[in-house]
Length: 238
Ligand SMILES: [Zn+2]
Ligand SMILES: [Zn+2]
Image (cartoon, rainbow, N blue to C red; front, side):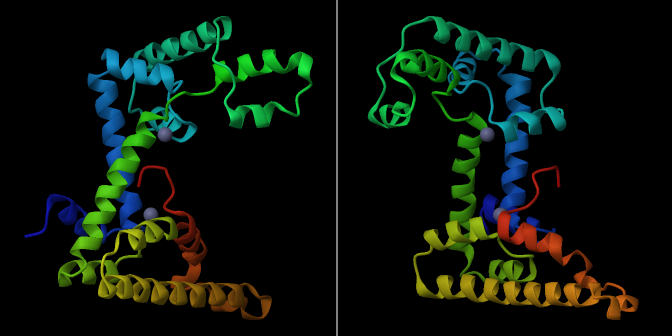
């Protein structure tokens, strides 16, 4: 009987794109939706968002575009984050670490302290909480996928899917603990890359004016599938 996560992986293997990207995105959307709905007034979450200066660019706009939070929720969070930034601009700040000292070297000495104070105030002290949660979830999904590969059902589902994107394939390879799983992951994805490359070659060939009457077959969207394979699924709702 597959675990809940393995069951979810099997389900998304039947959908286009990298199954891990898809589950990851679904999880992040649920997390943001839930946090906006239940935790906007939770002091711990508010404090975390003060330190992270709100969300990263990707997750801030995901929450806006997909309406995972409402105007009031955003207003409360960003009122806090801007307040924390302004307060930090006015207050004392710790001495630069060695990494900072290296970066500041190129700035003229007379302005260095002022620049450092401003950059310190404008720099998040914590990661975006959605990035943090996403990474925790990705590691659970990838481990579950790799552990389930010895079951024929999972191996066949992955084989029939569009395959993992390269970033998630690298993570999966880091999670393998035996030779058969490693060989299987490489063999499945080598075939997918070869097929995709052949489709791209066909698309390029048909773009040549001499073959323009051929029309495009299943390779018509291969360029989009290639981008997704190499970089991961698009971040918009899938
Ligand atoms: Zn992926
Ligand atoms: Zn983020």
